[in-house]
Image (cartoon, rainbow, N blue to C red; front, side):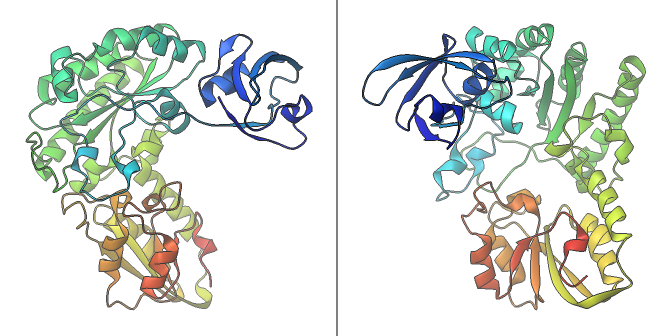
Length: 425
């Protein structure tokens, strides 16, 4: 890996490494990416195999504390792309003209370990799996969708995809924790197929820590793609009842519910969500399972501390998507409006970019937000859900908060972690 930066005062600077040098091996183990670097450099005695910028090959011995970093920033190689053509893949449903990164399908163990991205392991080699095991890349997040081999190959659009259960079994036997996901497509991997998938995965508990079931998302840009039926309100309610019964069975057998429905099922069907205590042992809350219950609890704690009267005049607009509007209204907007001198308006932005079938806030675009705010008195500030931005500060249509602010005529910001951080309270 090419060294891009050497931190001043670091071990790397002390031993003479400079930008442009290449780190080839650590203790004779090849360094291919940041995970290799982090794992192999954690020892206290290192032998660094360096290809210098001038073409010389040298070995450098280093002694350090195990948790002490060498002080290098390395060039990260491209992420591994997904070779599947899943019938439900949302990336295939994106409209044309978006930035290139939006169309990239990843299947990289680095992203599952660092960020919780899901991988299918459909073409995982022995070396790929051995790396996960040796480097203890745990937990690993796996998109299963179905454990029946032929059905899974059909869903993945990959006739040569490997059977998933032997792969998961190998990881489980090696002590790797596994978080699994099922994108549920009505008429395809539900019914008896879903029950088989849940039962098969439950056999690997406690290595399989969770089974998340999420509804298929359908945009209005599916021309030429496999026909899929949408999840209806009645279907969602039946699924809640079915999975609720399975959770009780699994809790009795394993002492753990194991299988979880994502929050969309409850919100789209106006069904009360389980209490936060239900999700206490759930390791995938950040992936949309139990997030709403935790949000409601956090807002109840914070809004309980609101003063009876604001120190100044607070005029603000809260923007959300259709799915979460009642949660935001009851948990945040209404408590704020009970404070004297506070005027908090709730604006629900319809997703016209992807289509009306997409109702989650994470897929709102800048143009959707601008359309929702058009000709409205927005007050002193506009607040957006934090998940509308990527790590580079961009919405899906490349708009920024500063660009939105200029168009709206008022500061547009992400809603703060704490309600009490709102200016004027």
